[in-house]
Amino acid sequence: MTPRSVLITASLLAGLVLAAGCKSSSGTAAPAAAPVTVRLLAYVNVSSGCQQATVDFLHSLPGKYPGVQVELVDFGDGGPGAARWEQSGLKCMALEINGQSIVKYPVEGTMRVMAFRAPAGFYWEHADLEAAVQAAGQGTLQPATEEEFLAGGGTAPTQAEVDKYKAERKPDGAQ
View 1 (tube, one colour):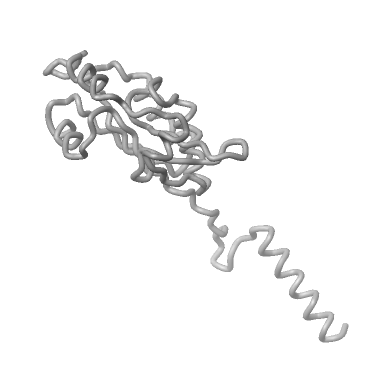
View 2 (cartoon, rainbow, N blue to C red):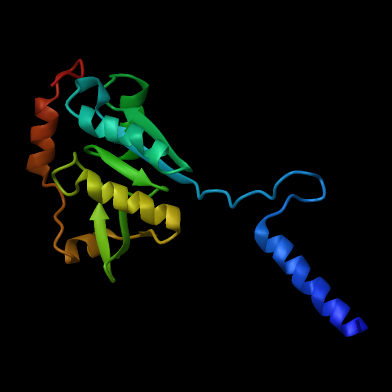
């Protein structure tokens, strides 16, 4: 064999070894790519029980999507959760994916703009949230503006809706 053919053969073998994911010289397998961290902060009136389906759905996401971290802030607790919710400036339930409650992500060749505000059924469904979480995990979720949401046909909660929601809440957090 010529020196050139030895070099080519060695290069090809090295490439095959790396591509096959063989154990490193330390005897451990090369680490797989770490999942993208998706942080989901959910301001939900958990204490009332009226959002239990959404709470259950939120709890299911980390099992389906590695890297998803869910934090629930119970604003119906009358204590720290309620204080944190009020400090956030929110007027109703909201979900933030990586710090954003209004996001956009690709769906069938177009960008869908979604506002994760108010309970499921007002502006979004659980399937919309799952699609947004998937997009975040794939790195295709982007922040969006209120204007983009409204321009796409979305509506913002009216003050009457907010007032009605607050009036229905009992001081102990029950509905």
